[in-house]
View 1 (tube, helix red, strand yellow):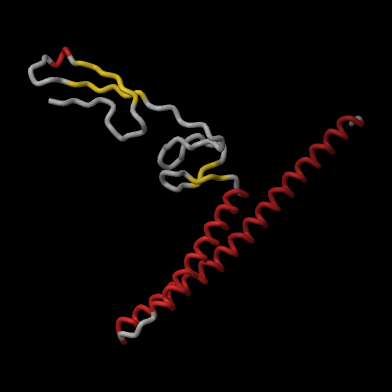
View 2 (cartoon, rainbow, N blue to C red):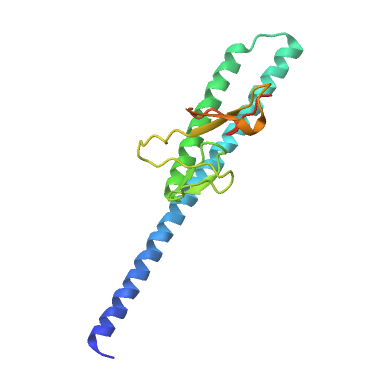
Length: 166
């Protein structure tokens, strides 16, 4: 082996070691976030249990615990916000994004959702092109072979591409 091939082999080994180190860091960070999510979920379940208990006592005894229930609801909302933040951080580390239609996790470079097929928006603020829709209108006394076609630009309304009116 000559010196250049040894150098090349060493460079490749360093590159592989760096990639493995980076992946390990990602896994450790993801695990920490997942552990925090589990802890917050546990706190959230306890909060829900307290709310349920207070509501039950209110109904049984007729006592007014609305203020306590309100505080617990606020606490639950805060925990839900923390949970959402942790989940978005974890998805960012895993390099995924959520589908706005079905909520599935998709790779950042995906253009379509793997679950529902919806077009995923890019990070840039490019507006999607408006669809061209063709409507076919058949009048009562008109021969169906002489259909009148009209083109119109529509937004993202959910109308069929071909509409027949009899």
